[in-house]
Length: 635
Ligand code: 0RA
Image 1 (cartoon, rainbow, N blue to C red):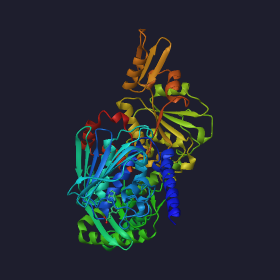
Image 2 (image 1 turned 45 degrees about the vertical axis):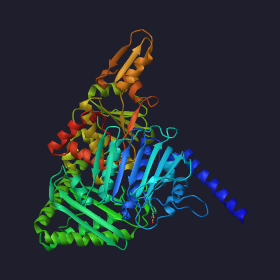
Image 3 (image 1 turned 90 degrees about the horizontal axis):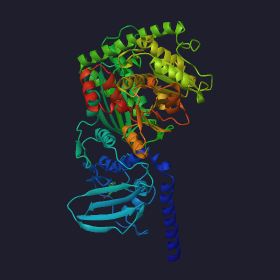
């Protein structure tokens, strides 16, 4: 018997070794990538564990610190990861979760876990991908301590002192052998923590960047109610924030919403604190309750009279900001990106809870109800007008694929997968691009002057703008109800503007258009930003194109001889001759392009509202604060 136990133990051990070395061999399988995004996955993993402890009701404080030595620490005042020894393996629970793949989920059951779907790879994955991890557990008056290196426990678990604290502190040093870059980005961490603290009300999360001394503390008594207030801080509100929280058999349901005078809707949904970017059952339940309750109230209050005078689902969402957050025991995340909540029972649960709460709120606040319905009514009328206007435009054939704009220099290929559309600012750069391009696969559409700011206009006005119309026709996808991504004529749509403030402005306008009306193109990764060089550095026959000041300086240093070095600064695309433009910016073999992604719908929504919306002061503040960064606006 003893023998077989030993053997079993040995086999287990081997499996463990294979487990974590598999993580090191294929990190992408566990954290998506080894770029900065993957690096921050480690941070989310560690923070999520403490948030889980808070959601379970055992923890009220979480401290996140970016340390000067390149490590990051997360400390909480929860129960502390158990340190008792497992009878069979002789390892502590702490060591097991740190060193065994997927061991985390096996203990500590009960409660809702963040680590349900997208993340939740387990702390052992962080351990495997870190050069060093320090774990401290404060329990029973003692400080327990263990250190790990690239997934392996160095020494045994030790007691290194006494304490009156309870909780867990994990410090990790991401492994340079694994990641392209190991520098933590404080704004990214801050943004995520802000979001998490809205979703976990009553918890205080402190964040500090020891590299700069910057520090913040978040505590939102109002939870997602405060979140809606934050999202609407630069908008003009209609009425207060409507809020409901209910613990049901299906799980915890929380909804907060507020109308604004804006035209866009901003609805964000979460399941167990995970942003469900593709919605799902909770969103469906919310939407049907919203449409039903508003219509039935409006009818009862005799604001809507005619039999067919109904507000559509679109009408009741115009200008609406809402957060729907549910917590459930076994969330199912579906779809390609696992961003859609599948649990069917959540639909009825949210619908029932929200129906009741909204109906009650409208009954109790008749003036507010009138204002909200007035806004929805306005939306309905505008939509009818826009539809009529669009029908006229479409009847005139303006959006038909037959009449490609005269300014478009199309490519000869008709295969969308290989075709590229360059949207170029100005006629002179457009001219160079037309001459320099590979005409088989590259089409050029010059845009003259400013395109319309779509943030402040409705669809009918947007379609009346020539520059926008040209772009829509060239892409072939239609707009609004007639949008069809399968008709996209070019799988790469490249925005090519000057590297100056005007260029950045035009680029932002075009990105806003994409964000508001062609979001599917962004999500499918079809939109790119060209990266023209800022400098040409040459010496004799040598020449290099440089994309930043730092790169220029590096190149100058590398040209060591005494021969004269010439530096040319490109002020605009128009200054490059066709050959140079091809070589530096357009040639698929050598160019750099930025693919635009929607990393964070909320953040981009805020950026667009701030930069493009009707309130002037916040825009001024934003531009002053980010004046240097605006050129690299990344949505
Ligand atoms: C399961 C059981 C217990 C604590 C935890 C998990 C726990 C895990 C983490 C990860 C980060 N911070 C944490 N805090 C607690 C303890 C069960 C008990 O003491 O009865």
